[in-house]
Image (cartoon, rainbow, N blue to C red; front, side, top):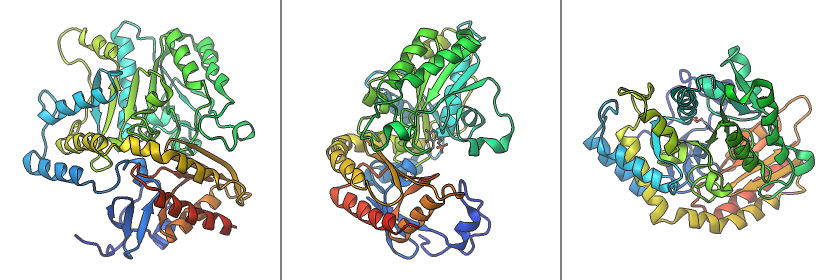
Amino acid sequence: MNQTRPESLASFWMPFTNNRDFKASPRLLVSAEGMYYKDVEGRAILDGTAGLWCVPCGHAQPKIVAAVREMVGQLDFAPTFQMGHPSAFDLADKLMAYTNGRFGHVFYTNSGSEAVDTALKIALAYHRARGEGTRTRLIGRERAYHGVGFGGMSVGGIGGNRKHYGPLLPGVDHLPHTHNLEKNAFTRGEPEYGAHLADELERIVALHDASTIAAVIVEPVAGSTGVLIPPKGYLKRLRELCTKHGILLIFDEVITGFGRLTTPFAADYFDIEPDMMTTAKGLTNGTVPMGAVFSKQFIHDTFMQAPAGIELFHGYTYSGHPLACAAALATLEVFEEQKILDHAKSMQPYWEDAIHSLKGLPHVIDLRSIGLVAGIELEPVAGKPGARAYDAFKKMFADGVLTRVTGDIIALSPPLTLEKQHIDELFGKLEKVLRGLD
Ligand code: PMP
């Protein structure tokens, strides 16, 4: 394997990257095992973010690596249009069992963005199939991230991601976000204040009428915009209002799915029944790209009652790719055999104490945590939003820890296999870096 520096950094147009800054001082990862990456200098880098939130079981899990190797030699590709291969069906059954019967069917995609756009399309087609084709409006939330497809971007609520691309999808409304530093700063778990913000849905219904609204999509815990944890009772209220008005509720569990909150899904943690759920990332432990939409039985049933023929005019060449299915099947086995969720639960109190021990450090204006995820919000430098956290990110990498920043928030979401010594290393270095920030 080539572990040397690339010959040039010139041609790769890097995603969501400050390309000019990166190319002046690149960070290059060449291998990974367990809780650590190794960079091109041979330095160990503690993975404080499970890659991009996508490696819950730790890197290079032997069972997953072997399953992918075996499958690539056996079945490199097989279509799932009008035919299939066994592991796609086996995986679907196992995934549905993993939701404890909450969902009946799974539709495969290759990413979280595709899962979101797929779920939105299923919502629209579902209403049309049952004779309520007027339900076309989609409702997202401010500060939501639902990927980069036109659907996901439209229901997403990040001005910086949206403003470059014109009007996006028509007929989209946004609920307010629930982040409130004045009321909820330094909360462990769900904050007290803000459940009433779900009632904003009533305002949108009053304005447009329920008969025009297809679906509401929310991240149960918003990850990419800085670990925004729902206020107590907020999601339950949203569920009640969606049910009252015949609106489908979609949970975007691309980040929260597969153990991030120490339960299989955030829906389990909050004990809410969404109608659809989007997943990706941890589904294959990050090994092979894959996303999926889980749908309630009644949604699928509606399509199956349509006149004979293709029921859903949607799909991707790589939906249910054999390598992704092999990786996902092995990932589910690793979750079970290694009791990953039990371990995550056992680490959670130590993790939470470590985060909240940072209170009082310079520039720290909020610390929030739930499951094995945490957000550390820093006071922005006047006139330079995001600069302070970006500085922290670079210093942490130089010190051998991978973190993730969004605006002036440092997000932490380690592999669930971490041990106390990793928490000590991460927070020891973080404290040092935070103390040294300008
Ligand atoms: N939804 C959520 C909640 C996400 O966090 C992400 C990615 N971070 C996506 C969708 C998009 O996933 P992908 O990058 O795999 O397209």
